[in-house]
Image (tube, rainbow, N blue to C red):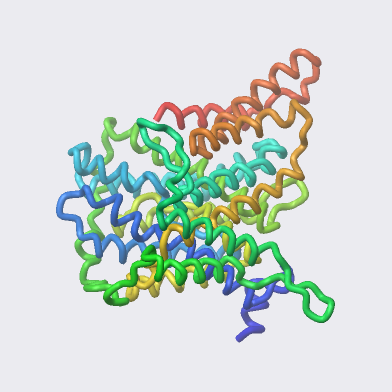
Length: 447
């Protein structure tokens, strides 16, 4: 069995091992599991929604998407419902903008458009149009975002309309546990153990850190143990949220802005996140292109179509995959492991939902820091570096890495045009695909 896995996933060829891939997949799952609670919360505004059905469908779709990605693309880039979008769709349904069936009909149509773009390799073409320095810089951009998400989960900072950005309340047990978790994850990840004169790195450091932080949270009262570990009425609840897609009902001019918003968000979200994770896993070539991107796009778009049938919004690359990659994941076996654990959630979701945000947040802070290591590969020449700096600023201060990529691209095109005019060198002038991609990117801020 082990030899078959080695051969199919090319594990040794990529410098990994079966145990490393399994541990990495479990680590990714641990940092992604919060999506189950998030989806039930985000869709709770929909009148009469069955929250158990939403949770089970989320676990099922995420599991199938991750396993499909692992088997087809052989990458450790996991998939899950995109954050923010579930809340938007639920809001449109709740306020009467669309019916429940129309809401997921929009997701279905956007998924079909993603699939067509993927089949004709347009997304892959646009990926190659990104400047090399931006491709390298995207990894650190995602790093800032992941670290920020982690800090928020740990209670180390908060944002509200009145006070803006504020430090966390360090008298709160969740914040204290978050600090403890960060210390544990950092030590286990970066401190090596010396045995018989040789230094060894701890395998599964982040997964161990999440488990230890969760256990420490029990006597602190932060980790709340469930009354039962089994999901109540798991599969019976699926029918209440699934298979209610109205495709023809969304073929109206009034729905075009919403459709374009879903399309643009997933397009550039996957583009940026996919490149960042591929770079972190060492899957990019010398020109910083990602050979398997075409396969990633196909699975991504197919997962969105699948999700629409189960009442789940846009499914795309999940930045938290970086936690498994930091643990050593380099192949699709990691994704298959993540998917299997999400399948288990269909039956025993309360057990996984008891992992506190402080535990997963601590791991994400360390992962974010690790992704900043790619800064060393960035060309710091002012002309080349400015688009990267623009990406960072938008991501850090607006928590919008997709918007950061868009602004970075605008800056790159502006500089390229000015440079070609001032230096009278046609080679600097942006190519037609670059102009087309930049124009499409502008839709992100319109819709």
